[in-house]
Length: 427
Image (cartoon, rainbow, N blue to C red; front, side):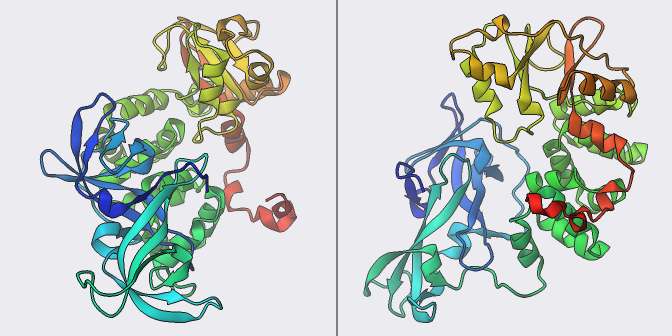
């Protein structure tokens, strides 16, 4: 844990105002949402329940929160206004963890005396956006939280028992806690081999971002089955969290009526990206591309580019290069000027303008370029991603090598137990 990371007791956050980046109040903190984990591992903090000005309680993920202090919370300003609905694996920190009776754990792991939980502390992990509950403030004695007598002390999460999930059992919570340690592709493989009923239970308990990552790794039949068992508003949230090209592929497998209904429930910007991708043939550059590559203006610097490349949510293929375009920055952009590879960014001073580094001699792909030609392009130029540009010169997106491989491999490749072939040694 980074020494400079602040530790905040959650009781100090109850009722504090939540602001957007320009200082307008969004609402007030009503509670915090955590996910318990197997054994005595500190719980992961998923987000906050915020009571907005209409008195509706909504969920704000920790990834949308840029500042947390005892007196205020700052968000990115992007808040989903759908009513908060707690899921089976989630715990309300103020509502469910405080005032509980738990036991201290002795030096040898044996259970000790019973204590009352008065508060818990959260802290951000170093170099990450994740937060976790790492300390517990307890009172000794048999009285409840209002009892004045008894010694109080602060202990590590691992020094108490009575919170964490059991290591055995068949509940979805145990599976989710176990899956948390796995890569999305490995979770998808495990889900594929569960019964449909069990698969639906686990999918319902995963948070939106995690389920989106896992859906992208599942065979199409499983994707359609899982999406069909979610409530429509939740299904739209998950589709928004997916890469636009994967969401478009999944929606294309649904009946027209279901597809339109889900697109209507999605945020307009996300739905527009997906509709644009669905207009292209599947096995073309336009059908394969993602609409969210790293786009920079000509006056951006190498430092700006490297900051964008460092974003945690980017795949290695998308982080391999940036695309320099005139405004607007969102695809379809203004005129596409060229590409700058990550290695070139590392070789030049931070203040260098990316416009002076662009490689403009490589012809971009057109959206109707067929899959074999896309494959040959990537192989010929030793690239892991390629720009897709329309006739007017606007950047539409980028095709990455992982999407190309996905369409070149046999349809059932995701169901192959590749770990048995010895590839598991690379993990």
